[in-house]
Image: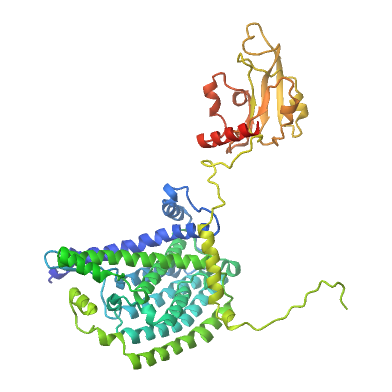
Length: 380
Length: 190
């Protein structure tokens, strides 16, 4: 057997990028727990955790130590295998979703090598994210069922029903976006927005629907019914303790990170920022094309992370502002408001495209163009 | 029939479109919380940061020495009698020969204990003392501790040290800025 292809991949720059994406997802999720507490505190006129390390920055570490040293508890009558499998699945699916998110354009190395700042580029990135995120609800369902506890089971059922209801409207919102962009590749969608007009301009209603559904999909307030502690003790994770509990909480924050990244990429230009063509032209003139490309790429990655952090903050901001929906209100909002609105959005989008044409006509995405070429095309 | 005329007639109106859409109300609410995000925080980072203390604040007790460094307390017991919380206990003793530089009068307190968990910091002991021996300091407080017996302050922690430089090391100490602010306020009062 020939392992040379595998070996060259393992030691390539691309594998480093994959490792970095994995690490950054975990790191951001870790510090989201800290950020959540600080944001909650600030919105309530408090200061939040500030004892562990400077500004309390070591708090996530202290939390992890606490969770790891807690007792591993298995309820009597629980299905032990599935009980452990639930949080593992929730965590794995949450991490998998970050694989296709383009965190930046390409870096050009001196030897002609091109490094994409994205773990894997697939031409169905949007579908992949959608599918993997939907799988995440199995983690909650399995965990809730395996606990052999009525509250957990109720939480799990709520999670499943909620996910199914809101995925529908979310998919509809994405179809309208798909009609505008003409591609399912997240990278292509991000590159299309290089001309400065972000998709939010074409799809304001679609964004609102997608955003609301993203809140429901990540089980965040005001849609955190699967774990509402006032009604269900703790929902699907009532019986969980120690790091298994930690994994569920962690998966939620990774989901928030992925949802923020997807929203930034789909609707807010991804790694594009205003004035990048000017910067690119200026640096090409004064330095070299290679240098200009790399600088713009790095700045783009920084911009994307700024957008992601804003959305993570937005998630927390909403959480500490709004009370929880009642279950019937949740279902009514999903089925009788968001779903028809999403269909209306598709019809409106179709009408607009009929009269004005869509982005696909402007940018030929079918052929695999080199990054610089794409930029040239996008600049027109 | 109405029992009082305070009853208010409430009308249940159907929600308007803006109310049904939730979004305007949500945005208003988020505006309110964002205002709080930038507002001044109510929390004080306690051990590092203290609230401003009034010049007349009654804090941790001190047993004073006179200008020659002798203990002023004669163990008359008036403070213990005056104490509404019964926090003060003492044992009186007679001054021996050669102890004139330690105790001002012939009788002194062999032991003098204040239970800081009982004490209500009312300052009646200070008022009762005929020898101007006990004072409640304005700039020091009994710090939190883990064990109850640590709150029973004996003479070792109550009597002013002879060395004036060592005097500032007891209880929770104000920062330099806070001490300065306190001194300024006290000067303004006097």
